[in-house]
Image 1 (cartoon, rainbow, N blue to C red):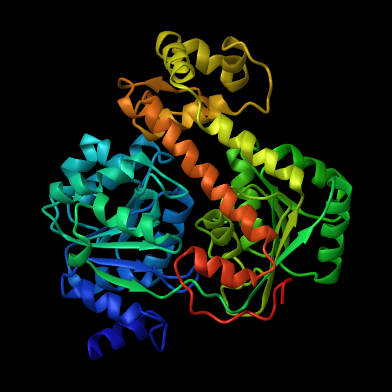
Image 2: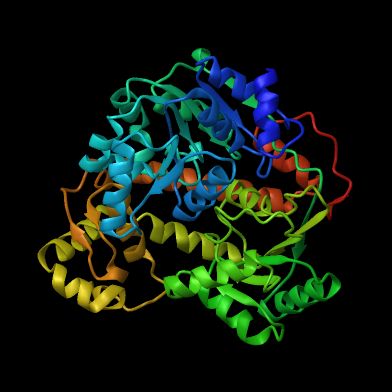
Length: 473
């Protein structure tokens, strides 16, 4: 224990927070762990410290490149030989890192689950003794979670390939059912896993729902919120078109981040926000993942998100320094239709999936030359609010059917369509699950009860008192 405290001080901390010490001790004792810890409570320490202490290689499976880069920087700052391997690296840089991995030069490596499809990675990692397999954002394992990624369901296979090292599964947002599915998908028995649940209580967050009608009323309320506190703020939008409309009419200096901006510009906006060169950013939900900015004071949702998990993950980016922070959801009944449309486009039928697949397979040069809009027209629909195509492109990538990116003009088909993408019954189950999650969020919005209590109950906690700081208190 004295050694742990010594390493902790080397990392720049005087004491452990929450369950960190117990989780780390279990990992060092080679016990498999499921850890649920609120955003900002220091989940990364639970694998960074073992990586420093255990010897061998720690592999961290992480879903986002921004998240990986941030964690590599943290690890290096603490004297850990760390790196990441991902799709945005040049082939030369990837080869360089594969060679270092083969030579056992790393103590910790961050990869997306899709990396385990690559023969070069498997050959390089096989040269190492893997001491710990850490699964960050472990809710992505569950098909019934809010951010399912198919390759996460192969964790059991990954672990077998690595000779069954100790596994640490980490998440901030998972319902009781999703927790059980995480353990099941990892090939483990519920009773054989040590479970730590620090709860999801964030006492410093004030959660508020403002019932409004129409774009203009929302815009005025947003201006009022921003005028009241000139502090670091993220405003989240479901629709890029709404974001751009607000950007034109806001009349306040701000940054923007969304998927239609060039990648270089997105990176530039992100760096400016992190460095304090702008304290207001209008963004789609992808912004904030992997960003460790501790002094965000306000989160505003201009439109309703799709479920409570996403909402709480997004507001969790506020107040990571423990200081009082404020969250506002600008709710309009009409916005529910946006999420209903998203669900419709997020569950394209098997016939449409097959059409997209065949078009890319048979005409890759044409598809890459004409881009998304050209492919949309080839498929005989012109509505830019029809997101089925984007959904299918994402599904093909996540299931390992395609490689490359249409934006980079190198998209190609590399395997057959799996049954999971053509099974109508399974598609119907997924749609019903998402509809149920949206209904839970709407019921929470309409409830007169304490906002924080409603969130906690959704995640299986009934014992917390009222927060005395939301719009219902």
